[in-house]
Image (cartoon, rainbow, N blue to C red; front, side, top):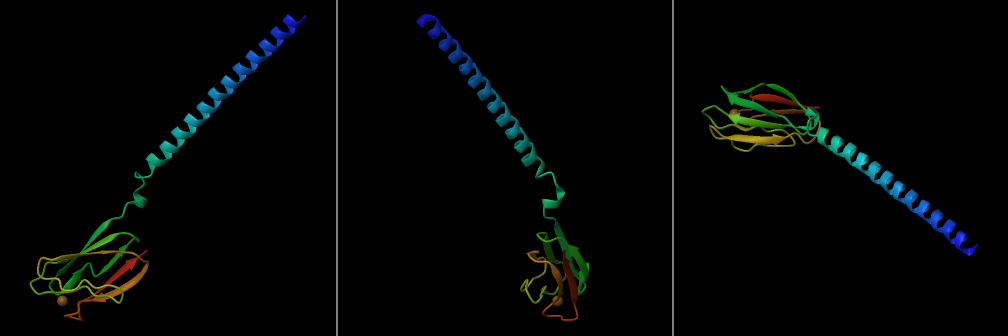
Length: 133
Ligand SMILES: [Cu+2]
């Protein structure tokens, strides 16, 4: 009698063992699926054009800014290029390129939203507008 009891315990034990193994396989499968999903999610990140900052160019020539009005998104970069003969600046209340000699470029990163009127400190008649959205 005691032998048969042992057998039953042994059987039950083996069944439990199989069940735990099966559960572990299930958990592993779920983990693998979750990892695949998160990998796919992170992979799709860089593809979205929204998150990639753009670079815009404002040319300074003939004592004017081209384009005079530029609209960008927050985080974009704006390159001010002095293609004129005279030195110029791009100067707003919150930022200033400083002296830009002929051929020099200064890059501004649009950190905050708003409308920024700017001028050339040497030639205040030169006016530009930067709109950051
Ligand atoms: Cu100027």
